[in-house]
Image 1: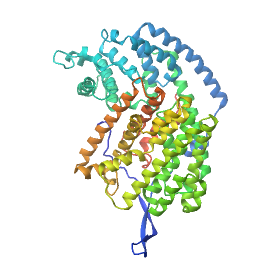
Image 2: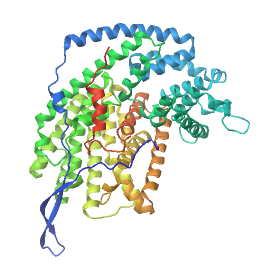
Image 3: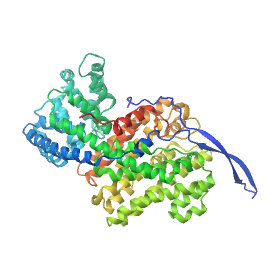
Image 4: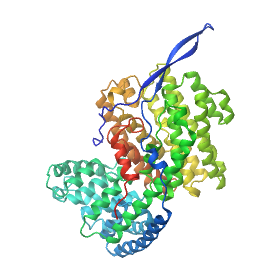
Length: 571
């Protein structure tokens, strides 16, 4: 986890304005105190207008789609032709995933992997380190439970990985990537991780070594935790430099990237139009206005066209939740927050009559955003699942309110108390519920009930997001605030470095939980688990550089989003 830089000292939030609040004393008298309302010191998304004025060229888009369909046919032929050579086929599948086009060939890939899985005990004993490692990782990532002892053949009589493997850098790199799909108590994969990191680091120091750049990137961004929409351009450029590249696949990757980018621009155009219509940034100038950043957060993980409705629903809900979070996080008084919490518990627009004026618009807008999602459920005949979405939101509100009571009451919760509350307040439970809604019929009432019990996969997704978010807060800004880092330091009398090290270990453990949940047979359909795994990559990607782009205006994040949403690939 040392690939994350959690020492950045970017400027962040906070200004304040005073409000007078009534404080009721035990003797029945009322005293008035000054209350400092927190105002988030961050400007609106600087590029919102770019997408607001975007218009889609339907004729050009249709031409691209037609060409994409033609190229898909050619690539499918190549994929099927490669089945006669297992390593060639695995390499081709890996390339499809790196280039961001594997979703076009899901059935063919699943069928091929299933065939390989059925014979893993034969081929794994005969093949090279690279072949076994690549096959192991791809099979595990697709839910096939290959035992980790297939790597025993690469160990010596002292139960150590053979020294002869060190010179095989491609094999070592593949083993390093494979080690990241490990679950708990898989000792050989833990040893593989340590073994490969130790020896791959020496490759990076050899500046002229052709694999040095690839190795350095892998050490910082292992594929299983990081592969996303942000990487597709990088791998498309790298594939183009390969003298043996498949021309049809390369062209498909480029056209597909641009076609999907056009869809993302259209979605952002719709979202920003909706957001401007709500006028919430003007009505609540103290809160964060981060529609584009939030959309990017989800889209880097779930970029494919079939997730369009999900991305839009995520983004609308998240934009309003972010402002609600800012109200609970410092702007609202305890009396105002009690009223808002009660309003969410009742889930009724008539409650706005009891709310302060500044809360009314955000409350109704949030209920409107949920109303759109509930209409989707009603049209599909799944109205019985609506209450699960509302309950997921109420859980978040209760967590926000608990945090506010600790802060305003100047209480110091124990580490266990705070971390338990913080994992639910990160709002991933609601994201999970939205996933179930837009994944369609596979999300039965039983699956919603599974999610409602806060299962291991959901807890891991929440935990990864919470801990990486808290570790991204600059140390000088942690004073006077509650976070998992601060409460751990106080509770265990630990240094900041010790707290961060412990939380990095916890992130690793949460990933092991997710990896275990991926392995078939799963309690719920595999696409649901896969969705949680992919969403867990978003915080890894977003907080990699040690800052929170939803609070801090940071050029690095804007540059990343520009590559994904604005700059097309030349074809």
